[in-house]
Amino acid sequence: MSDRKYDLILASLLGGAMGDSLGAEIEFWPLRDIRGHFPEGLTELPPHDGRRGAITDDTQMTLFTAEGLITAILRQDARGICDPVSVVHHALLRWLKTQEISPRMQVDSGGLLADQRLHRRRAPGNTCLSSLAAAERFGDTARNDSKGCGAIMRVAPVAFLNGANHVQLAMGCSALTHGHVAGQEAAAAWASILSAAFRGNDVEEAARSLLGRFRIETDNALRAALDAPRDGKPETIEDLGGGWVAEEALAIALYSVLAANGFEHGLRIAVTHSGDSDSTGAIAGNLLGLCYPDEVLAHRWRTQLECLDLIEVIAHDLWLAAHAGSGRGFGCNPEAELRGRYAGY
Picture 1 (cartoon, one colour):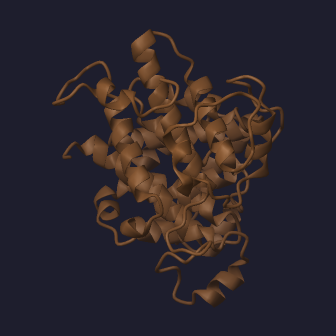
Picture 2: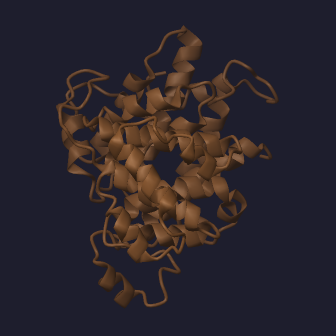
């Protein structure tokens, strides 16, 4: 498949999964322990939960978010009306079932939910679990005041939708699990930066264009990342925070991309700190994939990734769904190819 937009979507999702996997084992580790255990730095994916290339809830929820967005696109095209946030909510409730928690509403059983490889509990955030478990209707917003990084870690698929209001959609999807507006705005800012990079725009210019558009937490995070010295040192990362809350994760991910001289270098910057390393790696990896797609697509870590085939299928289907209703440049009907694969269509 030669379409450059497809390559970018795939590289972004692969980059996020690689960052997630690179940081999974060292999440919660103090920086001194990371340096002691990896004196040459993280040059390979460390084994986690019994395998190299393991993905965590960050990548799991990103895939389910994408599944929901694809379903929403198809439903809108078929019926002329759809609330995409509610459809994404349905998809995230299906992820909840993979974590052995039953949602209050009935959800479909096919699609990603049917793949037993995703039924692994890899330290999912309690906020995501509790807010999804408490929802009484599709589209219910979270009844908490959390701005944890779970609000931003799964937002990348939003950036690839043609004609979408990325700010509004990112905030709506984040509000399903995180009630604090600062977390929602951090996700919206990140979706905006990803969307700009997806369209070929400069990352730093895209970030600077957002200054003054959001409340103080997100604005300060953007400024901190833009103004920090581009040395890529762990101490510089730690000055930006631990990534446990959304605006800190935004700052670390953006800084890692700005300081990077390549994809792998940027991932190592993003995860080497005493904080939420898998989440900051996943978030940064989504943007690094857009900045260095050829490096990602040819990277040696690609074949080590857990659920590689699912990531590739979701990337293909996100790209295909963007053309639903057009048929342009295809030897098939995009809706017909996708119709049988998405629950609730």
